[in-house]
Image (tube, rainbow, N blue to C red; front, side):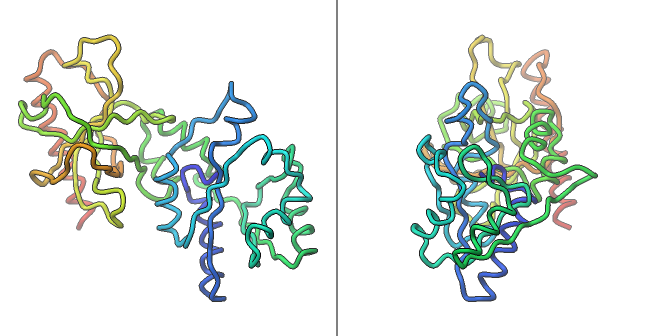
Length: 295
């Protein structure tokens, strides 16, 4: 799945990319949509860390020349382990190597493991590389571990496990301009991911999704805005205030946001003036963070 495209996934991608460049080959990432649990266990479906567009962007940043997204259906799930490599060869006639993690499983009922893959692939002239699991602080890196840290607001652990800043993407939507009246205009995103970060304030970078590097620096609030909202059915909103003056984005623009540091949890303030003063402090914390990072 490559959900999160974390350091464990990167070890697989790096091996494939290095080999492709050495042999004048092409490194391709194969992933699935939807997550298999959506099809096989819909009542207990895994909540993904990132949407397909962000995942593909990250895989390309790691050197994948193409990202193939296989539709995961019950028919695809029924492909036997023995038929898996021939299926890949029919789709990719020039296939020479398969790169996987050491705990990777395949085939109907997940009966195939790396040892079986090596046997089946070698019979058809295809090599297999198995990347060892990557640990951090004595425990394996996994998407499950990242989801738990994200929900707890532990962005430092999230980003350490990912090996880069957590990312989101969304379209700019019209806002009520409450931030502007307080002196802190924002870009607003109706962004409600499957795996939610803890509601709170964060230092972020932002820019167009297609940009190689996100140059904008900002302070983001993700949550329900309890100081200014009285509706019991408020949807979570991601608001980003740029630290470097006006930004040239319009309603409908698709932007990416990199979450760099957790500043504080979302909270209700006595009134808007108290909130405004707190936002001023949040802005200063974010500016100090970026100054330190950019030295």
